[in-house]
Image (cartoon, rainbow, N blue to C red; front, side):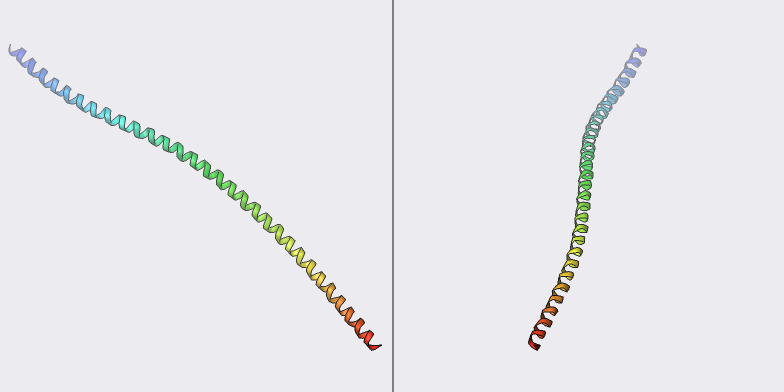
Length: 112
């Protein structure tokens, strides 16, 4: 009977330890579930961030292409403006020659 009492005492101690371990296991399982949910949310956010990054890269490429197009247009306009300035200078020179010729003709007509 002493052995039975001792065994019962040991059994109660072991049952107490099992209960403590069960509670600890339940808490750890809850923590694992919380961490898994957090991990899932983070994975979704990483996917969203990757999509946003790809969209940003695409937009950056579009903006760079638009800037190049604008720079090309500016260079063409500068070339056109340079050509227009040359033409204007030529026309002004021709006009001045004609004016001088007309003045000389008037002077010659007056002299007669």
